Length: 134
Image (cartoon, rainbow, N blue to C red; front, side, top):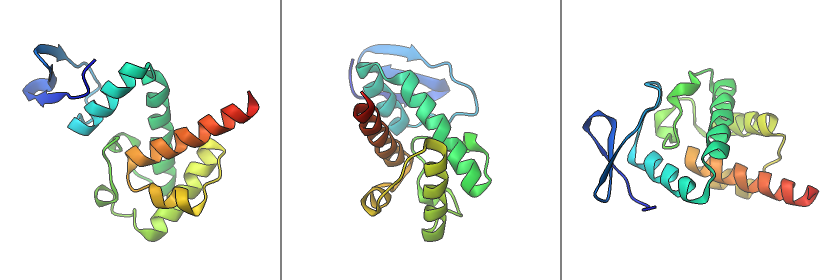
């Protein structure tokens, strides 16, 4: 599996010399970052887990900012959500803590610069909790 995907017109993705057609709901925006994230997960076998994680992160965004969760993608940043300012970040962190049953420290909050990093931090915390109970 290659680590690079390129989005072509009509939802076609070119992977080296192969062309793969993506069949995703229209509500999901496909971006090169999302495709790269997805290809790395396919390599590790974690697609279903990360899609579930992203869905929960989207729910936390809805709770924090009262926005349509389908507008939140793996490439969403504070520039894309008007209410995601410094106070909004605290509100979002609180929503994420409730959604996942986790506690974030200041370092975690500083790393959560975009949705991709939020997913990474949350997954790391969940893995630690899972490892502690194993």
